[in-house]
Image 1 (cartoon, helix red, strand yellow):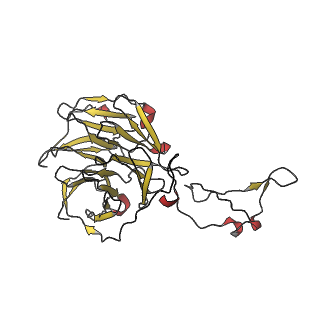
Image 2 (cartoon, rainbow, N blue to C red):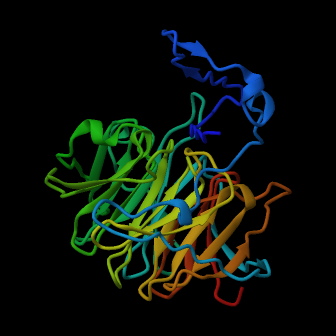
Length: 346
């Protein structure tokens, strides 16, 4: 008997795999199904490899460690509905002074207009900077810049643009355009560089605002990876990625070696799981299809599960997430067109 393992990603659920061999009399023939085990090669559907099956990158010995958290109760989140009536809010970022910025992708239809909104630190004022109407096509994510402006990821325009929140003036960063094709998320590092989740190509890329590519890391070797979002910890510079191909949260060390992986509920790459990392290393992840937010400690153990409330009977679908200076989480609910602030009492 000889073991033959074939690993492939199937997005259609009806892929056929034919196994050929070279018999002694030459040529190539299909191996008869009756000599395969199980008969007809009828395997049950299997999951993509776990973290324990994933080896470190070249030059490293040992297996990647997976840390399983305890079974946790689902906590109903106490929320403040900061703003509602949006079309498809997907990205949110909160500045050090508490000012929040939200990007609305605009949804679909003739009246679907993308927008950028600024929410005051006391949450009493919501305004839209005087941005050129053509400057936003379909923004997906946003990050604060050091100078008080914001960086907006717009994959449909193949741009990351810095906007001045007072004047509305925008200037696109000189990034390689193909780097941003169908990208769904990005994150800014403590060094001022950007991590880009290169969704269609299955990798994450660190790039400077001047457009210099510093490094590119594959997300999940041997699988059809679709990284959705990426963030770097301010504590140890570890890198976290949510992957819509394997449905995992993956952790790298500062050098780019994979360390840990956690399974996540399935999600699509359009409204996928996004994440943010707090100043203590806690990782917060949105779980869109469950309407939840999960928190992992810096030790890799899942600590909390919060359930977001529905609105008028429509379940929440959290996508974008960021942590404010007061320790409160901000989340975009794309299904209900609103922005929520999770209160610590919840």
